[in-house]
Length: 76
Image (cartoon, rainbow, N blue to C red; front, top):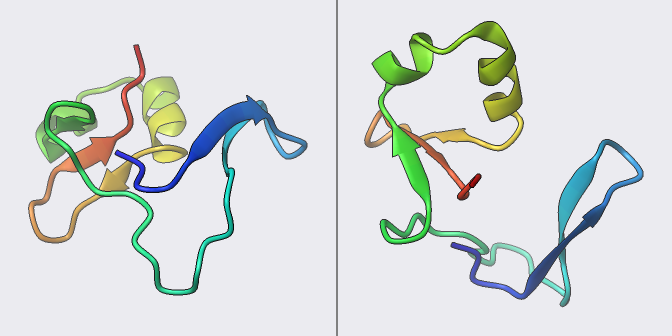
């Protein structure tokens, strides 16, 4: 879950993006995994996905080095 105020809008780079609505100080924590909000999947679940889905998730997902789980914002 984002810890700063953000908005989703069209991106000049590619499709839609998440943009901060406030200045962010260097070394600030801007996101933290929140079980009730974010999604996760195991490495095995990720490996079973088709290549198109993997490619899309690689743009928004984060592989946690501590848990070994993929974490991502809600996508429904």
